[in-house]
Image: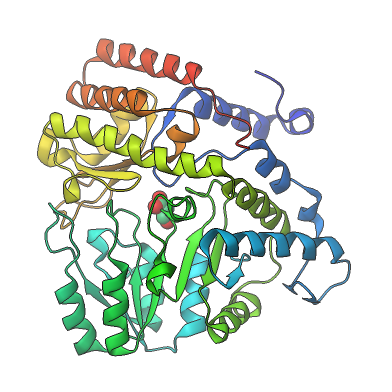
Amino acid sequence: MAELYPYIKKQDKAVYKALQGEETRQREGIELIPSENYVSKAVREANASNLTNKYSEGYPGRRYYGGQEYTDIVENIARDRAKKLFNCKFANVQPHAGAPANVAMYFALLEPGDTILGMDLSHGGHLTHGHPVTYLTKIFKFVRYKMKNPDTGEIDYDEMLQVAKREKPKMILAGYSAYPRELEYEKFVKIAKEVGAITVMDAAHIAGLIAGKACKNPFDYGFDIITTTTHKTLRGPRGGMILTKENEEYAKKIDKSVFPGFQGGPIMNTIAAKAVAFGEDLSPKFRTYAKQILKNAKAMEEVYHKSGIRMITGGTSNHLILADVYGSLGITGQEAETVLDEVGITLNKNSIADDTRKPMDPSGIRFGTPAVTTRGFKEKECKRVAELMVDAMKNKSDSKKKKAIHNEIKSLCKKFPIPEKFV
Ligand code: DSN
């Protein structure tokens, strides 16, 4: 293996050893966690750049410290590219991650005590959409809509309308971390208009699919706000972003809420990495990548169908699959995660809709294709990986079989090394 971190190697053996181990893990294993991906060397260079030395509180042209001639350039590039990618008027690229982006967005647009209508958490919603373990529930009132039927996945828009009329939410939230279907954004907007609510899409999982035109853009259907992380399908550094379609008042409130409301100095090296990633995302190659993610997920869906494994919503129309392995194979989500780890496949256990098992050992597994598609996998390889997954789960105690599967996974990874550049 080429020497990756020569300075760390000389100075700090303990950290070096861990980074090298992680390098091997990433190279030799298959990454199916649907919220993970690989970034280009250019994005990594920007993220490790000299901007880590700089404080830049404020926004371009309006900073609290001197020496901002280059940080302003970088932040403006990131903002302009983000606006182009999502076809909107305003972008705040300073949120440190997805959760802080959502928190800043709530406080920008709502008052304490206001009501937010979001997806039932067990049906695919996210912690920051009002899980009782978060402090957000001490400040705002969260009310819920659900899927009509977890086996088909259609959202119950009639229920959404009823709850909206009854509860008068100030905000209607779409966007989920474990929901494998496209959304009918026009229905959200219609209901929001009826009750005077703001529409927000938490697009963290599918932002790259929207930017790459493989999924619909909520702004085209009248959504007001999109929040997202930048490190999933967008293939950028770990970070967050808030986009506003056209309402300048919302955008101003969001800027004030991110800084000084919630954050101090922006992480300018990460903002440079966001700029570089968004530059890559604007390339025609990125559109091909986004479409291939969907085709690869469909190829895996086919294998799960054939194997008789229940998938929540019946399959997938995006990058991820949520499979009820406990109901179908009698293996818990935790057991499946562990056995797949043993054969070099990383994914996560996940609760399924209305799960009767506990979150730390739920009935399901969640997996997706963004990272393997970056690696160059097409339908053929994804189908094979799905077959190997099913084989491993069915033979969880057969060490000989698991060794053979692990060897096949390793040789597949060798054939498809992690790429260094995307444009
Ligand atoms: N942790 C992210 C995910 O895996 O979906 C969401 O926060």
